[in-house]
Image (cartoon, rainbow, N blue to C red; front, side):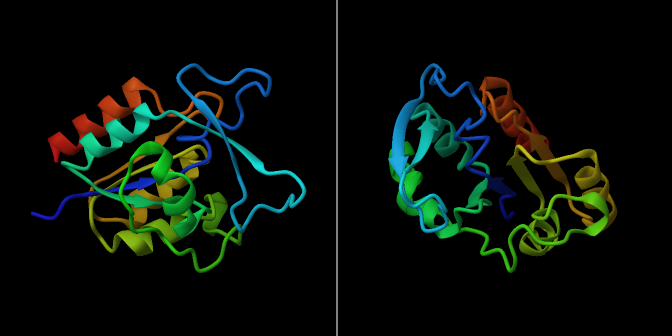
Length: 170
């Protein structure tokens, strides 16, 4: 049986960018990065990453196929994965970023379904809304878990447990 996909956003779930600027979240390390999409050329992007998330994701790789679902696209393999101890992962190469989306959904949602091609998937992102849940329920026949992550906190133990439990229940 084919594993379900685990579609991973970076900013929000792995990089709690909305946490208080002056206080790095506990367990996170600070990194300065210059991915090609970073618009503020004079100053590198501050990214907080928790190295323990790499171990958590590698454990989930036993039951999921891990995929980057981030605006970092393939650059997540260069800038994010090495800090978490992750191997190179496939990524969604968005046909258009930040474009028009169906009926109030997040712009990624339509492309998530195209990428999944009818496979079961779990998706972790900080921009998931009830509209996205409705859209996926109407347009994706396989099982899907849309897990909203607070961008002030990032992925936490209950999120990893929910992902493991969902995959086990398939």
